[in-house]
Amino acid sequence: MNRPYNLDSAIRKIPDFPKPGILFYDITSILTNPKAFRYCIDAMAEIYRDSPVDAVACIEARGFLFAAPFAERLGLPLVLVRKKGKLPGKVIEKTFTLEYGTDTIQVHEDDLQAGKHYLIVDDLIATGGTVKAVCDIITEAGASVHEVFCVIGLPFLPYRDLLSSYTVRTLIEYDSEHM
Image: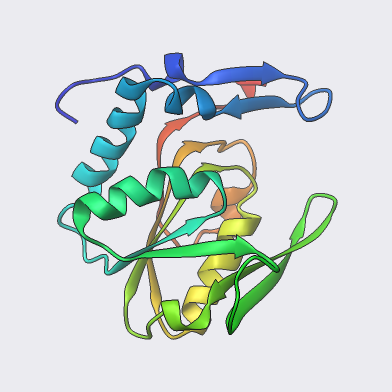
């Protein structure tokens, strides 16, 4: 980026949410700050402008907010990754393990094209479980994951181990000292 921006100052930190001992990084404060939001979209466009990305796969719900303006700016198709039961028609789904249970995500089968390169976008990456499930869906559809992009990364959690086969890029990372 040509102009440095203090993204950390735009991210609201909420202690003990959703449970004691957790520090929640709330991206809604980026969305209420047009300069911070523009910085994120500008940074994404600068990073990926010349990349061989054919489409953007974004994760419900906050990933939609960053991926949609980015995809429009670069003229790329936008593929929505939704929680189970939110998409009509024929879907590809993947069930994955969360810290305390399981979840299932789905993508319209017709939205993924074999041989294409997808950029996965979400707002924050912690353990990487959801992102790994998206990577699996994309590769099982015969396509490839170009990279994973998240605005915020929490590298003290094991996402880099889980996603060691993929390049993961973030705009800002928080270490365990911010907990």
